[in-house]
Image 1 (cartoon, rainbow, N blue to C red):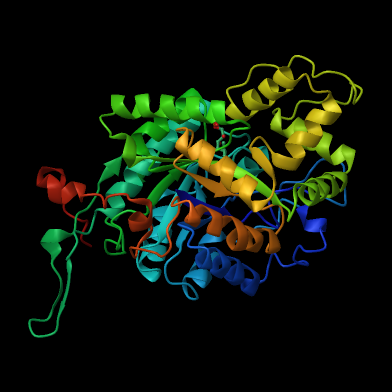
Image 2: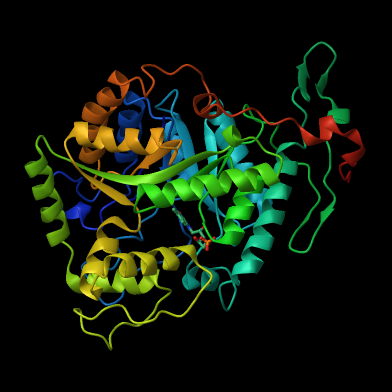
Length: 446
Ligand SMILES: Cc1cc2nc3c(=O)[nH]c(=O)nc-3n(C[C@H](O)[C@H](O)[C@H](O)COP(=O)(O)O)c2cc1C
């Protein structure tokens, strides 16, 4: 079983930050993040995972929570600080293909892969917020299909940049005076619909060849994109059945791309609420849920429904018809409301508390049972563990659930490899230019 630790701000529960065991105002503190990573490494996690966006993300109308999801240090820099105090754990950061340029992203992740000796992963997202567009000189967020077309070209260019130095292109030969072998460095001369990139990258090929490519986005277009590029999918399912259907469908799409099923690890998010007894766990969940002001929950729901205004409806009403939008999160929320016939208030509370992923409430034994059931039932290759509050929720998982999983033979007792690819059982990609020299072009010379 593979495990990633989701280090979402102060935790996976929207009100987790209010819990007495949550860290106090630590989101700009390097030691907070380093300690979280060391805890995950102590638990032998495959990696840690930072979500990210490039905009301000207030929850409409509620000052106390307004900035909860906003404080986000640049995750590549945070991971560099973490790389310095950890040795094995994988380091995954989100990077948008809708904003920014492939050269910057390729360079950032190649650098992180070098500095961490092969532990970098890139979570490829196409972004969701209008405010991000306004920060990057655009009037509006790109449309869904445009975003994915741009994402495909973005990732193609990034991969070519990582391959623009052959392994071994750096000679650093003091005797002959040759620092590099220019015949093993390739220009790109890329001129596409979205990007023009001369190349080569100014960073030699990194230990993993490419950072591990992670993807999050689950529309039909998103799934086809993942089948082509992703090595890990971070996904979100409220129940084992939908996770299993998703995994089966992804395996079919992978086969259509000529890829083997084990080249992609599918990892749903799970929020574990752990108690020494079931009663204690249920109490903790109730305490966390009671800390979410109702307007915050409804505002959160409106956001997940594509900023649909619910102010004309009473909290006890059922969800009105929500306009179709090509966004997989909206679909999952609507499906949840219909399946369980939830009122707006209850639906809002549910999605605010656990977003659209599964919250497992119980003892460490119960949590291990559920993870084992999903894993052995073909619903997951592993899990993104989103502790409800940090750092204590992650430490609870490491100290109580990990030993349960180990005792059942489901999880490692020590790291067996060095790189994130080693941990996840993913092959190091071949260099596309070394494999087919006809693709090479000479770097520009001034
Ligand atoms: C589980 C999950 C996690 C995501 N994490 C991020 C993130 O950290 N930052 C971001 O900008 N977008 C994130 N997204 C948004 C996606 O990249 C994508 O833009 C959005 O889901 C719409 O595409 P889709 O309809 O294919 O799902 C995430 C989506 C999912 C489903």
